[in-house]
Image (cartoon, rainbow, N blue to C red; front, side):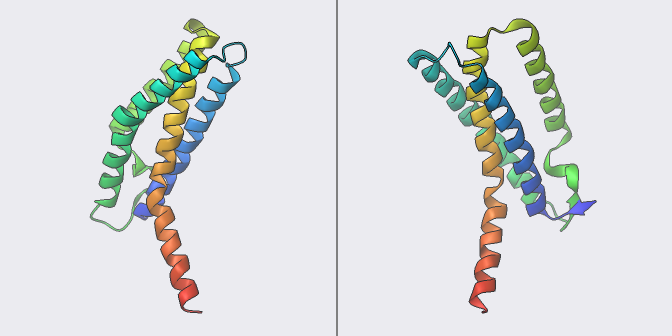
Length: 145
């Protein structure tokens, strides 16, 4: 199935937002007994690290790639390239193994809260362009009435 670039960005938005919300949920669920100012500060640092150095750049890179396709429609899984799908699979596997076998609840609370928040924000950022396009279409519709 082939879709327009804005639909690819919307798919990226949905996938990243769902992943971020789930990881954030896991992190927040691990906080009882670990809620301290230090842990909240560390979670904020994890968030900033991932958002500024990884996910913010990734959103810009993939948005530029998607909007730069020469054809009007692309295969619906092209919201990521192969490398990104491999990285996502590695991160999911590593995260599951880390949570199940190695990490204490305090670490999960801090790391997953920061990481999940950064992923969630990245997902929402993927949705900016489709949201703007939708807003423009609604404005045009109402201006013709």
